[in-house]
Length: 306
Image (cartoon, rainbow, N blue to C red; front, side, top):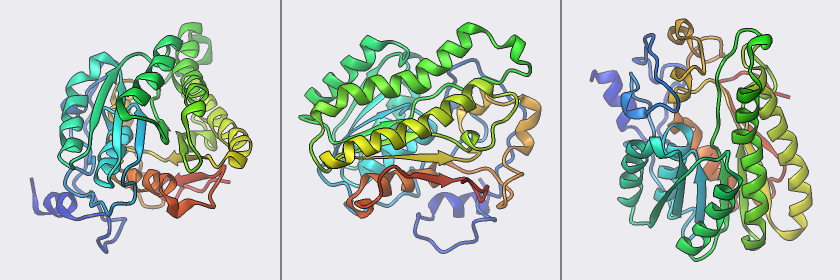
């Protein structure tokens, strides 16, 4: 690990720095993993905030459910929530157990309770039971992050199978609907729901027809449900990441030959790290954003969104 890497990994989220120069050592080579993939096998390793996120008690006593919590943005969010004082239930695929246990251990070091409930978000019964089990484990629920996602590129729409189209919508959209619907009866006023959308909702790549379509749907779902729940004191918002270095990219989320240029088309000239997304979720979860409802907070490295 060089000095640049040490500086990036030991700074905290409040450090004054040039954002265009951060993570300068990141130079991902062509690599591939089978779905769902593991952070533990990713080269280079993404920054989840293990060494960089410093909490300040903004979510003290909160009870959170996070899907896609084993790696990437979900993992960084779990770590940030824990360091802000929230107890967390983590949802992820059973094959992702090694990553999930690693993240859970980091989060537990913050002195909070962390529960792991693996399963498949495409399964309606699992999504419903996930909420019930989260409520039982945490003694209630007041924070839901619908982050789990599927992204697999297909060059030609005629080669996009019905099965993949269905799997992408079930993972990205149906699970969000099922979990939100099951969670609402348990959420007291002051609760928050945060959905993960994407720059793809605004600038769809031609090879990500199904994925981009789900992310546009998530935006609209968020704004519609936000209006319905705001009078109940429940805020619903979304975060739209730009190109972020996660295991999603090497499990056919992007063509392998494009990985070495991933994120170069942003104004900052680089990909983002999961640790740079977590503060957005903390902001939308905390009382600091009490007047923010139906918003999509873009964290895109400068790529403009409407």
